[in-house]
Length: 405
Image 1 (tube, rainbow, N blue to C red):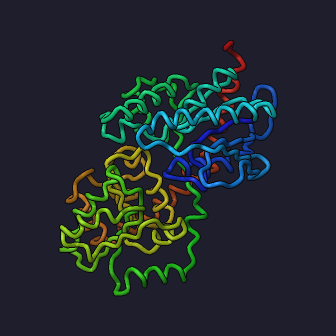
Image 2: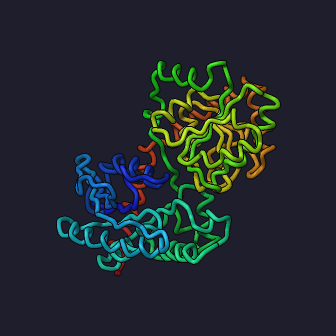
Image 3: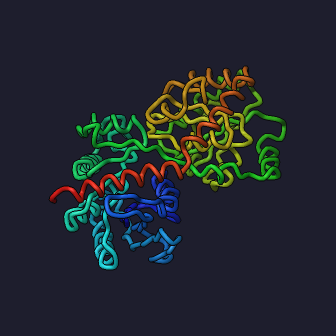
């Protein structure tokens, strides 16, 4: 079986979690054994994506995975939606040429950015179309549609769900969101969580850990860590507002902020008088992030909206104590007092409570930490996620063979 997997993002061009998800899933997905009505054999995956900074247009990653890139014109910031949708035609054109080499039995598109291409190819080829919805425009804006661009994206998300044979979401929360916003029936949506590369995350040399601890905690400071895109929905401002009370109880505490443009919150830290206890690290590599997880006292994710919360999984896998908002998919990954601590969203005092709970009872924190590590290894490996995805592909392709288009 061969599938066409389309994604706007793929390394080296990665903006958020979607590109990372596709890049880590695809190599494991390729090669999965597919037992269908007619034969048994491996799954071949062709990734069709964009490129902005040169690089090869075709890359054979392994025997079962090939990545094809098309040149996408720069996105117009004034007309973001239409410039993206119009660029989908370059994806369609390349896919048509690829299909002449080998037909595809299924099209899998990730999010609205490539939905137009996936839907177009579905109708041309009479081939099942599957979409993974990583987040929704309404969800990002707490249920509102604030602009014409947001309205257009919302409509494309609805159309993608309508056209799909099945929809994949990463959490039950996202499944419910699609039902509430778009009227998608439960039977059409399959929940398959995100996975993580556990071995890569836990691979941090002892000398690197010692270096980072000396760099950020030379006097034995307690370290709190925020990792994520520095946008309103990630709730960094809520965490900074909690710092004065945290420092009043534990003055020897520092907050590390890892994320591009985090320094835009420096004025808030200065206003609150905590600027000397907050380090804005800017963008850091995955390796440095994973090592930081191993040396901090807690990783805190105070999101206002989170479809899944892969950063929490990564922190748990690395052995960090996790504090996370009880919102969306985060609430399904982090269970209060079991494998982490959960906090009320948009509530600085709830963060203060959680940090005090963590620092005052290290024995209980150790129990939660070990439980989290075990759960991540058991349920969130990419091998496990890929098998579930391949099983869905097999089911859909078999169903397609039994029906007229």
